[in-house]
Structure formats: C-alpha cells, structure tokens
Amino acid sequence: MWNYLSLLPVILALWAIAGIWIVFAIAVVNGSVDLEKGFPFISNCGSYAPQSCIFGQILNTGAALAVWICIVRYHQLRDWGVKTWQNQLILWSGILCAVGTSIVGNFQVRCNLGDPPPETGLHFPTFPKASSGFFCVLGSQGFLGFVVLATLAL
Image 1 (cartoon, rainbow, N blue to C red):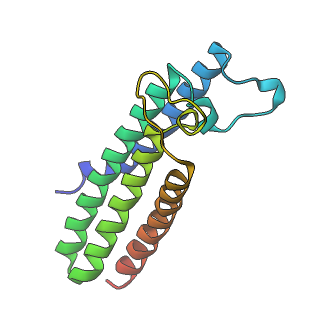
Image 2: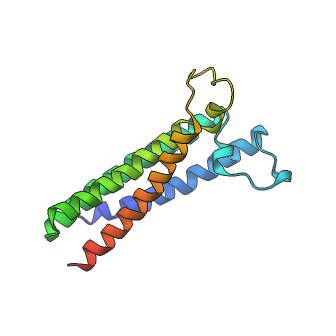
C-alpha cells in the first residue's frame, strides 16, 4: 500500500535541488548577484524579482510536499503501533518545519530593508523571520530525531 508513496522524499529532494539551481541561474543571468565577489547564498539570489517569485513558489511547493510526507509518515507509524503522543509530536514538528520554510520563502531580504517592494507593500521584520528559520531548523531536527526513536522502538 505504501510503496509508491516512498518516492515522495526523493521527489522533494529533487525538487529542492533543481529549484535552488534554477533560482541561482536566473540570478546570475539577471546580474542580481556578482560571482566575482564570491558564491552567494540562496537567500540573496532569491531576493529580487523575478527570481524571488520563483524562489517563494519552490519553497511553498516543497513545504506542501513536506506536510504530505509528514502525514503519510504519521499514518505509517500509527499502523505500526507507535504510541499516539509520540506520533503526534512527530507530525506537528514536521508541520512546524514546513510552515517555517514557507514563511522564509515568502519574505525575502528586500522586505526587511527600507521600503517594501511594490508588489507586496509589506514590511516583515528580521527578528520574526530569523526566529521562524530557527524554529524551522529546530522542527526538522526534532522531526528526524523523533522518527528515528519511533522506528527504533518497533
């Protein structure tokens, strides 16, 4: 029953790798980043239009895939007899990771500096973005740890 769903993590990984390189290529072609100053971070590449829109959609799609993977894993562990509270902790930490990824993808660096971009008109302070990134990393580490512990308990 679960065989074809085992491809979801592979699809997510390929999607993320391809998306990051596409955003990087667009930023280099547009001249948004200068490779002579060093290799840029992906957040710098995805800070300016049009690659900021593509970067946001890649992260949103990746977050949706991650939620799907978490829900499938929740049902797998439930069928294997993992305790309810441990399984729910795994599910919610994975969803927290996906929400943090979506927040980071939708508010780029340019929104934090000076005038808001004309297409959104939003200011998003640096602290909430940094804290959401921190919780995203914390959630992913917790998710992986809980999955390993729940799997070893079987």
